[in-house]
Length: 507
Image: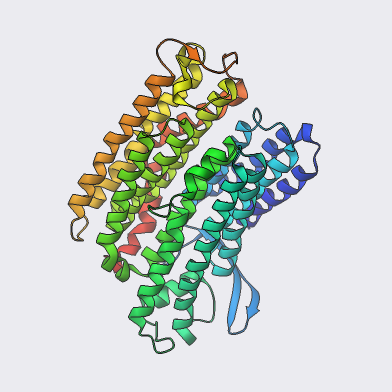
């Protein structure tokens, strides 16, 4: 019942913080976030699962399955559990939530109880997505995440916050509808083969060849249409070019803590769902589309990096770099090798930590200078040495500096994608590797212009050292990035144990 306890801590904490007076909300929210954080570490240290949660023979950790609702011919169960894919993402979500709450102490100075309550509600939705194994419960958690993020952007965001919030909600909600239609086509195509919306049972039935025709449509066509619908729906959440345009607006207008959660955890919902649905349920269709998906991945890597290179707003630079980094994840998934799938999952972790670090660093700079424009400042290193050091560390992590998490994630992906056997895999990988050069270009350019050289600031604010509570999240993230970069087997062993069984129906 530890997963139920984990979710309960988030929901109860959200309710308590909602009713707290504003002056007590920051400390109350931080305290409340520690309960799910500690619980997730207890789950990780006591993890005893093996194999893949969606495939036959997988042994889940912390599993609960009880009958919940009957909907016509289908039984909906409360089915939760974790394997080596979902367990690291649960830990990532709880770590980022606690640190994001701490980053809010300086910039959030009004309606604090509501802000922090929404942050904890957001955490509950995220965790539910990673632990739910019944589609009904999973979809509820998937949709719950949209509400607090919409409000965090729309109420506490920048000058164009309403536009960005509506754009975020419309894009992601329409994408969910498309994904839902694709998945339900598979369910109806299975007919009497399944009487549940349990995702492992549905996956195993599809892979066993039990999918039948639907309204005269052949099983192969149903699988193709469902794959495309689900891929499009999840690609918006990742996001993949060309359905990425909501992301920069959402990041730029969102307050710093929301940006940390959006880049660090919410984007992982898309890649996690692609891994669980498209590449686990329909590996044969993924094989047919592999060159096209690899092309989209490479375009996302290069195009996202080029867009970042053209930006003058530090937050936009980091936002577009997220599109590029998530392109690497897609490349690892479509490689469909042990290192490709494992590297993609590991990259979700490393990108979550690195993007959280960079957005939090930009937030600290903005809190002090009240500008994010590269041309408005220079020489900040002398007056903000610790923040500068953290930003530089995060930037070099993005560039793939050895002994940092970003290097290990990209190395695993490249090793896996070079070994892939679909047409053009080596060419796609080689082109994607060039994206690292562009990453170095825009981060070095931004650092040189803003952090070093003669001090200059176009705004009328005094620049000094950041408060301790602003620095602590940055320091923790830097330590975690280095730990994962030097000891990747902390998570990589359990990840490869979970992705290995998928390769039986490989590309």
